Length: 341
Image 1 (cartoon, one colour):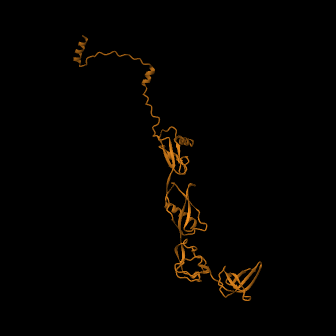
Image 2 (tube, one colour):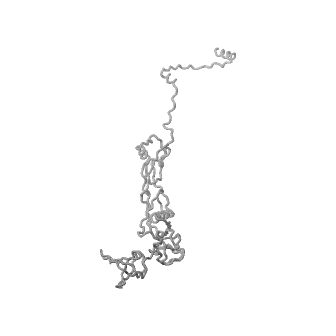
Image 3 (cartoon, one colour):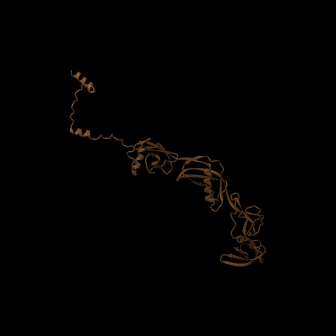
């Protein structure tokens, strides 16, 4: 009967028929639980660190100054370039662990604790190397010979007599030293011992034969010059010559030209040598001059006849006109010789 009445009312009022409903159980909540449910929900637990991870490299190529933190670690902002280990010896390598590097930095006051890490736990360290080629060897040998033998001018030119075999050397500044240099001065050809060092550490040494030229502007005869001509009257010009090709070539003329004369005749274009000049003749053959004879503390002066021409410092023959005896005397001035006994 009740169901029929509900249907009639629904037709007139436009409502859905009442459905049978299950009884709703009553829930009793404690005050503390009510407060907890009323509080806003706590956010989900965030990640421990949203920063990108630090990366430890699996290897590094370093120079002689050592291994630095920046060689091995990436992804750490403002990481200082701190030395964490010495460089390995030439031709060798070493292993560094991430733990030891982090501990070294911590001891220095650079704390990387708490970082997330990517990459291997160890790194292989080796030295940076490059090829030592012939052009560099030639240039460095030239520079060293220039420094040693051409300080007063001129230009050293070096050519290797034997091809250079390319070798591996550290990729850094190198110090070249030349051993077994000739004691009597530079000459050509010559065999040199080339020693190479990097930061004071020996890299290697090699024997290398070289051809050397030492180019200088030297005086040469501009025209034919005769023996005995005063140097002040000799016409000379400067030309570029290799002073090692002919020993004794004069690098320059003496300042006091008036005190010298030519000791030999020269063809046009011939370079003057140390044999080409002599002090000007001041004593002439047949001239009467004073002779000072020294015997210990005793000194006697007498007249003698010069039997040869002579210049200061030269030893010439003289004769006593009375006894006809001949002596050798050293020219002192234009009118005196010294005869030591």
